Amino acid sequence: MRAVLSFLLLVATLAGCTLIQSKPDTPAEERPAFNLFYTVWIKPEEKVATVKISLTRNPEWVNWMRFYVDGDRHGEFLSSGELLIEGDEVLWTPPDEDAWLQYDVRLESRRSNGRYDGYITDDWALFRADDLVPPVRTDFKDGTQSRAKLEINVPEGWSVVTRYPQYTSGRFKVDDEDRLVDRPTGWLVMGRIGTRRETIGGTKVTVSGPVDQGIRRMDMIAFLRWTLPTMQDLFPGFPDRLLIVSADDPMWRGALSAPNSLYLHADRPMISGNGTSTMIHELVHVAMSARGGPKADWIVEGLAEFYSLEVLHRSGTLSTERYEDAHEELAEWGRQADSLEVDRSHGPITAKAVATLRSIDADIREQSGGKRSLDDVLRSLAELDGEITREKFAELVDQARGTSG
Image 1 (tube, rainbow, N blue to C red):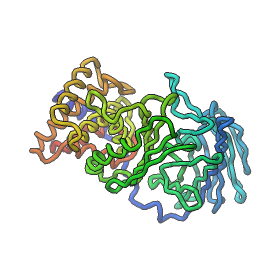
Image 2 (cartoon, rainbow, N blue to C red):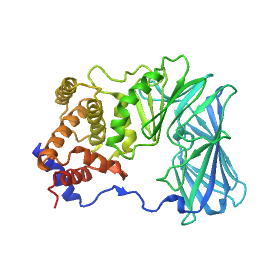
Image 3 (cartoon, helix red, strand yellow):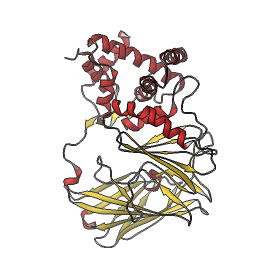
Image 4 (cartoon, helix red, strand yellow):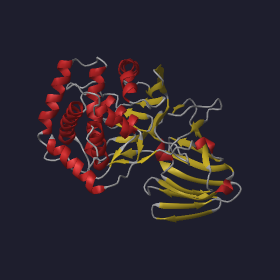
């Protein structure tokens, strides 16, 4: 344990800086705005969506927008103004009036194991809104920001559920307080779907997925009523809206988080036989909105797995005996991993990370006389933007222990 902490603290000392920066103090709402309007037409027969991006107010404030596209999925670009396509970059220089860009997106996305994390049939579609509008850099007038709306046009009889609040017109308000230029993100599902909604604490929860897929919507709602209050205690800034989407095969048999939303395969249990919870693991990712820096993915994945057990135990969902048994199983599995210093943490590496984090938690409690714990480190990381680095993690652990210089 001492060796692990010494290593982390040494890295922090040598680095002398961190890639994580605090969120801006100035509220984005105070800035004057140009308007973005995203219009989407879903075409099941072609397995594509046509997307049109329009600047409907103050388009002259936008100098250019550079999109980073996937050549296998994005194509058929048209626009007003000037358009330059070079490899996986599309540079759009909009005119001062009637500014629009249009393109097609292939909606199906297959992972390396052959299963899908984006899929469309004649009856439903499930994918990430990030697929509709690729990552973008924008040069615009200083001191301004965007206001954005999303309209999704679907076949007759289909419904649409996103993570965003919906106007009476059926359009969605796309608003991310951490961005000056809003684009749709997070999971969404549409088609002939079943949906259940519940407000738990301060969070409006929606569980949705295609009908006749064996989705346990009410089981999920009941499970969250039991566990989500503990998550909200851990993360005071937990999202006020949460969308969970689900479907059966051929979707990927796992779970994936995204902003204010997550996907969970219909066959995944709320709690696995070893006492861990895939859903709570992904909810920790949703709450933190974090990614690991170089060789630091074990921190992000380890925290998600460690706190999946903590939430289950603290909420009374998991007995102390089963909680300890789960930690013993993970510690045993983690012995198969030689090192935490890898690019991607999974399986035994994440299990080893859980054991390491539990030791760090015990050390913080001891050094601080029980006044602080790993919870304090977790909350500090959740309040920061950018990559979580080993250096920043070591610095926060040191502060929690009360031994920082």
